[in-house]
Length: 245
Image (tube, rainbow, N blue to C red):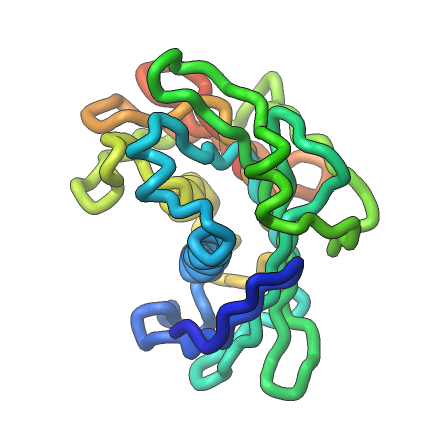
């Protein structure tokens, strides 16, 4: 639910989670967290004059290349969330970072997140530089929710492989798996005891290539350096890496 629009550096909304946002343990699901972040980003873009629908008509599209989410407190059933998001940076480049900060009704931080977006030219199928005008429409801030940068690299070896069957509901209007679905796909490859604990506090996703519909999808799993890593492959091509901690 959108509560407020602000044509300023910081865009704010109040979100009241739906029953479908919660998992069997009564906690906000990991995919629901990504969905509410993504929807807030889309609302901010529209409010800044950068409507996703209009951009697609003009032949350009924002491509999500990375998610980083830190869960300080897992929201449970009935908790409203105050969401603040902003675009970060001092000058336009080939990609931008967007930060998110979520607090509960008492103002206590519950989730912080960062997303990396690149601008894609649909006609040439290449990344394109972000214009000064487009970048300036967001009135970027220097503030960041994370004080450090974390590099995510795919392991060279894995301990197990799981074949995944895509459903029609996994596919978005572009004909490939929607970005928020990767976290659930990756969880299918995790050991049962890890899934049962349901207590991840950090999720990091790196997108390399889209998983297209009708692809043969496999998820390779390994536990390494205190992290649960799952690489998603489509037709034996590396497409994404998901890290859980």
